Length: 355
Image 1 (cartoon, rainbow, N blue to C red):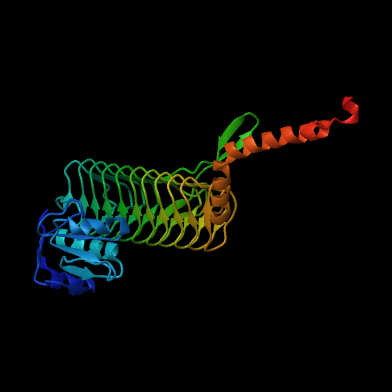
Image 2: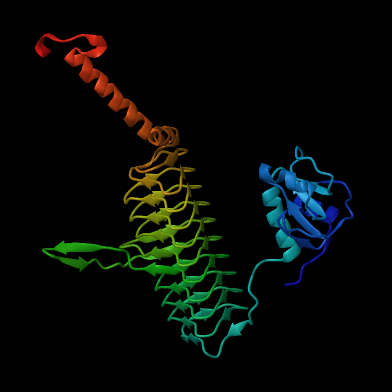
């Protein structure tokens, strides 16, 4: 991986930032604030790392205007986003190196359409009538079913499965072990038996989506399971049949979405959050880690806990729960006092029925 050097002034222009200090400082690498060495660019986005600016060995930093430092700096409103873009400028895109063309061990059906500059790696298989767009890279051991459509500039890491008739848009990234189009979990009861419901729909993954390792997206029973443009999905996520995940949503690790649930645009779900089926979750809803969403949620709400509640109420419940041992002790003491009052022996008095 060859890093590209830039002066701080050049980087600031490319990032749309303002230089503070020596703009001719040469930057040839990137690193976190604790690990940075001479020649590296670092950043400060979290206030707890501001003190580390006094000891870091970095040559320059991306920071907000209100964060003070004697280091040469690029001033940006969002240092983390700026650093992310700077990494691409200095390090280049994180795309694995691989030879273009179809490997000798790959099996590509003669009826498949393969675009220009496509890589089909060792032991891959591309089915009948499949279409692969230009500049797409399909790496080791991937299976692409019949009549699958994969767009341009897609990166498919090893051991991915894209089953029949599913569609993947442009600039999508599928990490190792992703399964697109596995059967939805549908069974009809026949006495003591479970009869499989045919899953005849498909999955559509729109442009600029990234899917993490070992995530599964089930095909629709009928119709489409859809992951909309710009959404980013972490590792080990389950998206069930006929779900819709709205544009630019974020699903963290081990999120589970039951069948026919629809998430709006910009939904954020923390790790191990779960959604029951047939819900409608509005735009920009935030779901905390391990929250269980059991009913539909209007746009803009924040949910915590199980069952998922408004975050203000949920935080009160958590605070009260932490005091349960103390409250239990107080209740027991009050019960004893009430019992004594009823018997009339509190403060030396005796009730008639005790004489």
